[in-house]
Length: 210
Image 1 (cartoon, rainbow, N blue to C red):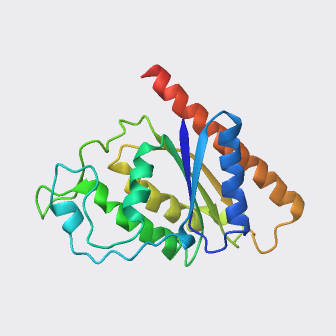
Image 2: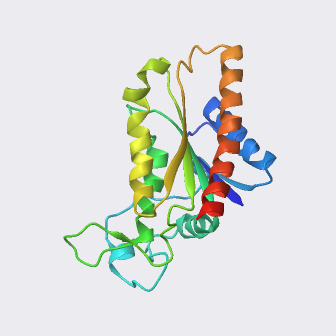
């Protein structure tokens, strides 16, 4: 079992980062292997919209992109994982530009049979709902604003996972980041730990029953 974590915050030692690591620690406690990517430290260029990756070579599992960066190697590892944890603070009511840039480049996992149709998952991409993902979203707004601050982030993640047939397992919204007390943050860290545990358990269950 391998769980991958992706941090969309530019602050690799910040609280969003700490929550992600705690969730990954929870996965490790169940025996899972983990791999973490701090996107700020990866060479991920902006998509140029050239369409090369999803209009050519349908026989490939990952479409070829003319940009020379880390995305191809990240996606190769991505496909080897069994579950995912995406963590991002909210910038302007949505995921960060770092996270958005990475999600856009995941278009290489798709192929268009017709320019006027939506892309389809490439051969070998569809997970048949045997993989799952969980999300961590942080914000300065109070927790009761999760619908406004958190839901757009969840939707951004789920939109990219839909074609891969990867279901959402858990969501953790942590508000009041600018004023959260140590005690409150400790409680959220415990919730993050169980988010990782629950993700692994859910994957094991769906594979045992299907």
